[in-house]
Image 1 (cartoon, rainbow, N blue to C red):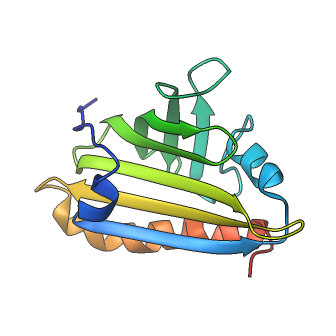
Image 2 (cartoon, rainbow, N blue to C red):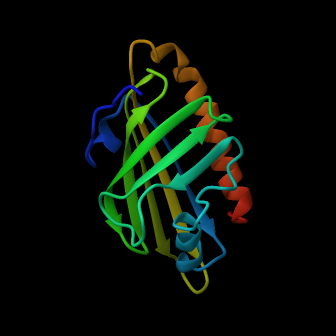
Length: 156
């Protein structure tokens, strides 16, 4: 699989393609975080499946595999930020298609009053020359994941 370039936190502000959503969720932060680190994270997103490839406890250096669109896109992820119960971020280390130079995602869960939280999900992408024409597909794909997330958590 082609290797991608590692990134740091600044990539979320500098990447050529950026997508983000924030929800107000009528659940405690601990419940949402539990879903994000559960055995099937993001299981509510149609066309996406993920599985951990590192043992617990998770932290910086944890790895995960994701399959998108029934496995048409397969990626390996490495977590470079981990604040237990609050935030994690990863970059993709390898992908089976040569369309990304770099890809990273950032997830933040924060309490927002009794029994409520705010959940933010950011995606940053630097496409390869081959991947630039496909950029128009990234917005609807991540838009679909964001809609599925809002529905699953009953977000407002």
